[in-house]
Image (cartoon, rainbow, N blue to C red):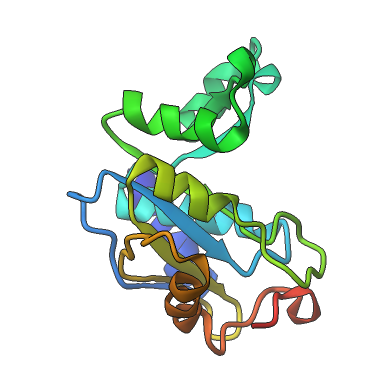
Length: 183
């Protein structure tokens, strides 16, 4: 029932579409979600998750996951980040991949909704450390589509892999175009 409501809202009322798929057998990955220029990106992700029926996750500091919000955040795919024990963020998040059977982590490499001139590299090094593919996901307000790309395994050569990933975002327009990352 919820899936039907999401489809009606997303496809019929809003006029959006989902292009591409994430194969269900890809149970662990880092989803590189761009451009991140608006709070509207959140509900696009919620609708995409609900329509595709694939578990998709996000990370938040463990202090967010306190009663009573912990139930809702976990229901929405949230996973608390515990950096105790001297772990840096990359190591801490990579350890989550090791203990979960299914973990598709959505990350916005821009790190903010404001204009940036450089991407944060954490998404890449998390995928590399966890041994999982990166799936580029474009929120294209110009075409009104969420475009799910093909998995790319990180090789350890960030610059070369980024060239491959950026091909997925050519011509993509964010909700606030002037805040989008320019390749």
